[in-house]
Structures are given as C-alpha cells and as structure tokens.
Image (cartoon, rainbow, N blue to C red; front, side):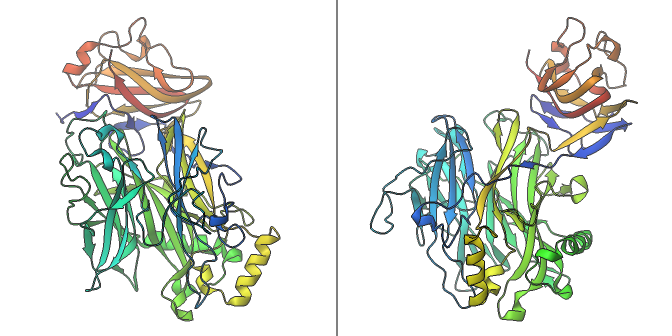
Length: 530
C-alpha cells in the first residue's frame, strides 16, 4: 500500500497531478488573470517626472492587517537612456491605499527632491530601498528582530573578480531601509541582475512536512547558463540556513539551477514573435529565442506557484553596439512541490497576457508583485510597458523625441502599474460537463474532521464526495449517495453527508476522496477542524 500524503488542514490545489490517483471525464483548464483596462497608478508627482518618465521598477505590494492598508513600493525613472545617454536618477517610492485601487503618496520627509522633502521617496540612487520583492514577516515578530520585519533583495553589482553579487536589505516599518552590513550574501559567475525572494512557510504551517523545504525563505537569482548559441536568462534557487536565529535572511545555500527555457519554449517564442511583428521595433530571425527574465514564487497550501516572466527576444542589440536584446514579455505559470522540480501549467499559455497594440501594457507584463488575497480573489500588481525591452537603448535622438511627442499626444504610454485578478486558488480547475466526471485522490492523511471544497457548480449541476478507505470502499455513511450535493459558487463549500459534517476518525487513518462532478469546476479542497 502506498504511503498516504500528509495534507493536514492545508489547502490542496489541483494545479498538478500530484494528489490525483485517477480521473475520468474531466478537463483541466487554465484560468488567465483578468486585467483592469487602465493603470491603477501612473507617474504624476514631480519626482516621478510624468512628462519624461514613468513607473519602471518592481512593484511590491502587501496588505498590512495592523494598519488596515494596502502598501505599495515602486520605482520611478526619468527619460530612460537612448544610445550614449546617461541614466537619470531613480527614486524608490511608497504609496498606501484603503482599497488597493486608489493610492495616496504620503509625505515622508526622508529625501529631498528640488529642495523639498514633502514627497513619498524612500530611497534613491546609492541608498537601500525595496527591490526584488518585499516580504512582510509579521508573524515572525518576536522570533526575529523587529527591525527585520520587512525584507528585500537586489543586485549588488559585480565584485573585483567579475562575479555577480546579490544582497539583502531590511526595514522595521517598510519606510526606513538599511542594507545588510555583510552584503553580498550570494555571488557567482554568470549571474544576472534580477533576483526575487519567497517566503516558504506561514504561521499556519508550522509543522515540518515530508518532501517540502523546511527553510523559511528562498532566493531566486538570475543565472546565465549556455543554452545553444546563447547564454540565456534562467533561474537558480537557494534557501536560508538561519531561519529563526538572530540573523535571518542572510545565510544561504549554494544556488542551483531550477528553471530554464527549452526547445518548446523557443518554438512558441517564434509563434509569439510572428504574431507580434507589427509592434516590434527591431527584429532579426537569427536572434529569436526564449529566456526567463524573472520568477515570482509564492506558496499556497502545499504547492509552490511560480509566475515566470517569459522573455521572447527578437533582436540582439550587439548589432547596435549594446549588450542587451529587444524583446516582448508575458507571464506564464509553473508549479512545484519541492522548489527543485517545476511543472509548466496550462500548455505554457499566458496567465497574464500582454494587452492590445494600443494598451499601456502592449509589449511587456513585467516586474509583477506577489499575489495578494483580497476577498475571493488573488490580486497581482505589475508594470505594463508600451514598448519592448531595451527599446530605448536602441533609440537615436530623433526616435526618442518622436516617442515623447507620441506620449504627449496620447498615442503612446509611459510605463505604469496595472492590476490583474483571478479567483483565489483558481489558476487551474478540473471541470466536468453535462455528462459528468470523477476525480479520485491518492491516499491522504487528513489533519481535520471536516471537508471543504473550492468549487463552482453551474445551475442544474452538482458535486458530491465519497470518502473511501485504503481499498477504495466507501466509509459507512460517507458514500456518494449519502452526500448532500454541493451547488453554487464558493471558495469554502462545507461538504455534508446527511446531517454529518465529517468524522473525527479521519485524522487517525488514511482516506481517499472520490469527487463526482456534473457541470462543475473543482479548484481545491482542504480538511478543516471540527
């Protein structure tokens, strides 16, 4: 008999087949995020230079339950360099919102812009500021130093030997940031600039789970392995070795490659570039390929989800004397159970797609933040670009002037922050039509005596659940015929068998679940406590 999977009381997504023993008559559906048609934040304040720049940097969003506020960190740049132009100062800024849609810029008084500190700047060139994701470790206050509640990571340039370096920064309030004294925390050859962080364990998941990393944090630095003719952006992973000591988020294992593009990615890149040909500034068939520019990893239940920045290169800027590429970018979804082995989901179709040719996010969905649970949805903030990657490195002065004229006339858009939404735990569903279907799990070891399902049942449809023993026989009173059909649409349908909500004996024995669906979609399930 196979060993049961310990699922405790954690949410169990059905994005992959890990928990599925058998399935009949069901389809697997990827649900892309829906996007608001207009940005939720764009350059407006003088230090954001609305006439010449935009909101370029990585947006990092959290919801702070202590303050009852959404909090957003973002970067602003001025006129990004054309060929042989100098970069203008970058500002890291901070905004708050009560609803996640309408944002305010608090006057923080930290940094001067044009002789005034009446602005929301929390960092500028040469100072510590949020970069590769802001982690809020509120649940760790008391176990970690309070001044390290907020954590971020970023590029630390290159050392004297040419190794790429990455460092970390901390803040107690999200406004005052300090770099770690002993940066860089990781370094190596063939490293890129991008790095993101992930929080692997929540306060509600304190126990060690076989097969899952037991570290508290992970970093995902960009690496550049040689893949075919090109060194390609890919991603490595390392975990924190000192989770609960006095120096968290600073000691890391050696990064190892975990995500890299393959031949199928190149084939699909050719298809996407062909479809986008009308919006490409520069194109050369010999330069076409797919790379992974970045990845945002977050945990939901026992599954790690990765939002991958799919980078389709159309032109090698070395032809113009630069070392970058012109490219378009969208977002795809992957899943992992151990952070080492990843499964690409949804046929590698976009989960956050680029907008139409005239949209503010027509060319790139870039630098997205961790999903936030807002009501029944997950929200992701991202920067949308109306031009391709490295376009401005390719502009001559006439092209740059034309771009600004087009922006002023409303024909083009500076980068701005958009918002994408999807059902909570709802990136992937298992669906049955009118003919019905079934899904049977592997043996599970529950941690609770009640069952809840995240499901949408159409009018006239139904979902029932049979609880079975290790031989596949229904437990007395918990057969499919005993189950009150689940109807309607909810994240936490409480499954009931007659007047019974479950059985305390489930926690002491392995069981398997057999779902019967008709005109219904199943996203996830969990065992709850009685």
